[in-house]
Image 1 (cartoon, rainbow, N blue to C red):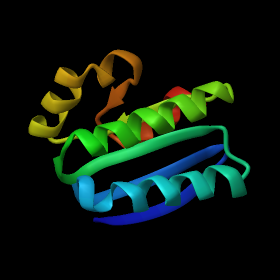
Image 2: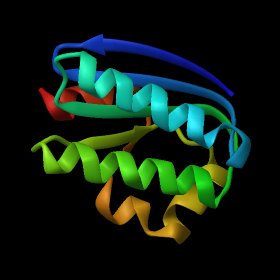
Image 3: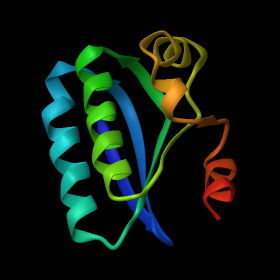
Image 4: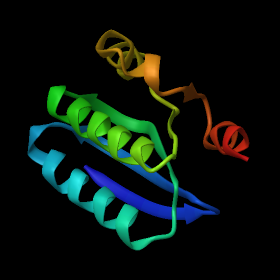
Length: 112
């Protein structure tokens, strides 16, 4: 899995590519947490358009970041998930607590 991290306004934007599974979950968690602590951001946007697979450990990391961000008064948004990834997010219940948008721009507009 590759991560591209950027910041726009008070939003940490994470562009994920590849598989989000047990093998990469710890690295994903630590990178996001580091940026949440070091950068002046309030919200988190996870762009999933290039994610090809996600398992329970990946879902757990996303849920953990959700708890961390919302405790600080922020929001977590998901964007661009492919149909099979979106189905997993629906079945896990994550889409009940985190909105999903088709594009990063739609998500950013929601946070504006």
